[in-house]
Length: 220
View 1 (cartoon, rainbow, N blue to C red):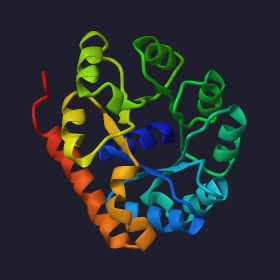
View 2: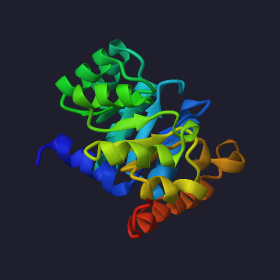
View 3: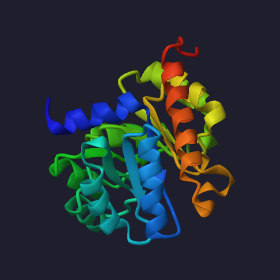
View 4: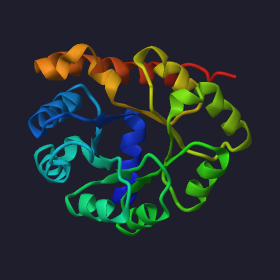
């Protein structure tokens, strides 16, 4: 198995990618540690976070094999190059940009472009996406995944945008391979308070919910 295939499988096995957004680099660093402690392997550093690229480089070294560090909110090829050079193992985008996808694929890393309509999703998949993140997922709901996958069962879809703990099981049982979660990992100002144990507990709840949902039959 190639390193890329192994990385992709680890992300899927975990079932949750944490989207790390924070107002400062230090808070993002602490958030990454707490999220990984809670059991999430895939840590997506949003490029909107101050010092995001140096942080990707730092986390890639400090967390070692315990995590797979990626870059999120990647909007162009230059950003993709910078993140990959810093050690990103996957590149996620809110929309499908052919140049970003090709830069990622040429580097041998996991490509997760965003798309919403069936045409956008198919275009990204046919271009070589490893996963397609349906964004914003909450705008269409889990039934949208079920409808798509009835006709296109070969797709590997990820639910991103508005995914909550209370509905994560429905996303998984509706066909999402995994979910990307940001805001709902850090409810009640846990980051601002520096309550990293609360973050880790919340993360464990997400991972447990995904695993429990996978043990149940699919919906519809």
